[in-house]
Length: 194
Image 1: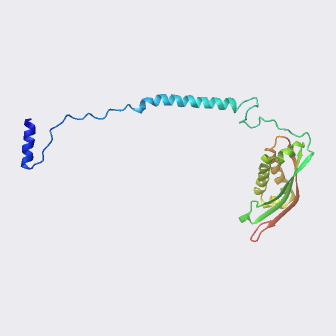
Image 2 (image 1 turned 90 degrees about the vertical axis):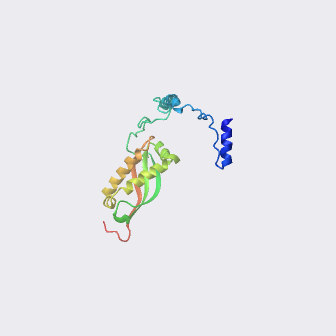
Image 3 (image 1 turned 135 degrees about the horizontal axis):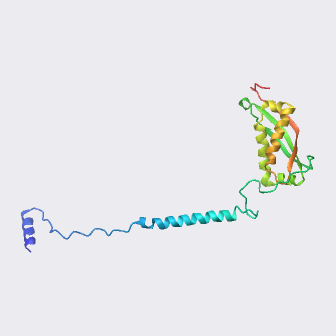
């Protein structure tokens, strides 16, 4: 009571009254740290990673051929017994810039692939494979020099490269020969070669 009287007297004198000191408020309750869950989370993540690894090993990389294969060469390739073509696949017209100065050279070629056995023709014409085969042909042309494309021996080198690249894609047979039914090398204005 005496303290209240003193506070009232101070208020009467015009000075602000200071409230009586109250008990110190209790601080917020400490929340438990989330770090205590870290070992449990790490153990769960490691177990999940091991489970995923084992699942991939078992179902994707099966050695019996029933799953997808991750290794090259597991699918048996059919190699023709002779170099005589049994079927042919017309790949159409290609217009390509081979390696040349400032890309001022064009090659126009109609390409036909001679394959053995007959099954290789069906594999090449398959929608899933045709674009890969065309890409291999374009690759062989674009990585050829004008000197290789200007004479017959050079074109044979290009055909050999093209056969090797296409044969990497085939399992049902092989390309045994490549024919150019039309082959035109055209220099554009400004070309200084050949």
